[in-house]
Image 1 (spheres, one colour):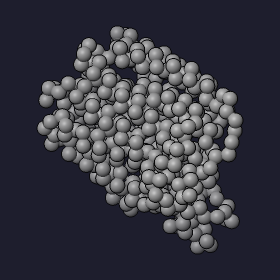
Image 2: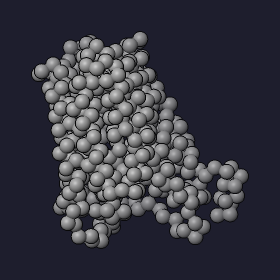
Image 3: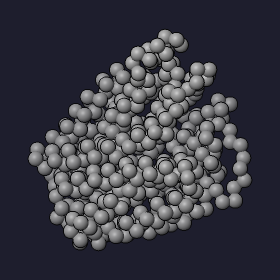
Image 4: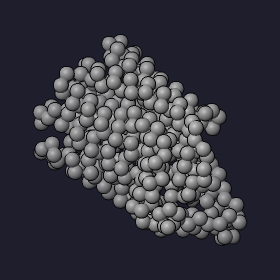
Length: 433
C-alpha cells in the first residue's frame, strides 16, 4: 500500500483518470459509429434504389440490440473484466461498420448494422460508464459519470459532420472506411490502457479511505444476474411507468430525430453536411442540458423534472414541421431547444429507479428500463421510414412523437405515488441464491 501511495505521489495522477480518459475516447467512437447510419440513408437510397423503410429496418434492429445487450453487459464486465468486454465491443463495432462498403442487398445490413454494430455499441455504452465510475472512484463519482455521459454528445459532434463531409466529397464508402479506421485505432489503445480494477495497479479507488475494504466484483453468470433483475422489476408498477416513459424517450430521440432528421433536412433542400452540423450543434447543447439536469436532480423532485422534460420535448417536436419552413433560423431554434432536452431525462430516471429498487439494484434496473428505450427507438426508426415511404414526408411522425411525449409527461407524475417503501434485495444476491 505504501508503494502504491508513493507511486501516486510521484505521478500526481491516479490511474483511474487514465481509465476515464480511455473510456471516454472508446465510448465517443462507438457513439459516433452508432449514429453513422443516419448519414448513409440517402446515399444508399440513391445508389441502390432501396426505400427508406427498407434501410430503416436495419437501423431498427441495431437500436433494439443496442438496448437488449445493456442488462447483460454489466454481468459480462463482472465476469470477464472491463478491458476484455470493451475490446470485444470495439471488435464487434469494427465488423459492423467495416464490412458495410461490401453490401449488395438490403438483408446484408441486418447482420452488420443490426447484430454486430448494435451489440458492439450497446456493450460500450452507459452501463460501462457506470461500472468505470463505481469501480474506480469514490470521490468525484458524479463528475466522472457526467463526463462519460457526455461521450454520446461528443461522438455526434466529432463524427457526424466529418462523415457527412466525406460522403459529399469522396462518397459513402470512403466515409465508412474513415469510421472503421477510428475504431481500429481505438482497439490497441483500449487493450494497453484499460484496467479492470484499482487492485490491479496496487491502488484503491480514487477518494477511498485507507481502511476501506477492496470491493472485488462478484463472478456471477451474466444471464442469471440479468434475469434476476428482470424478475425484480416485472411485477413493480414503477418499473412499467419508467419503462413507458423511456419507450417514448427513445422513440422521440434516437429513433426519430437521431435517425431521420438528416434525411428530413435533405427532403427540404438542406445539404447533408449542413444537416449533420445541426445534429452536432444539438450535441453541444445536449452536453450542457444533461449536466444541468444532473444538478437539478439533486435539488428537485425527479417526477416533476421528467414531466417538464417530456412536455417541452413534445412542444419542440410539434414545432419541427414548421421549423423547416422558417429557413435555417427555425431549425437553429429547434436545435437549441431540443438539444438541451435530448438526454436530460437520464439523471432523474436513474434517481427514480434507485428510489424504487434500491441503490444496489439501480444499475441493473436502469439497464432493463433502457431496453424499453431502445424498443421505442427501433419502433420509431422503422415506423417513420414506413410513413415516409407511404406519404412522402415525416410530418405525421414528428407530430405523433410530440403527442406521445405529452402522454409520457403525465405518466411521470404517477411514479412512486402510493408506493410503500420496502427493502430491496440486491440483484446479484438474488442471482447467486
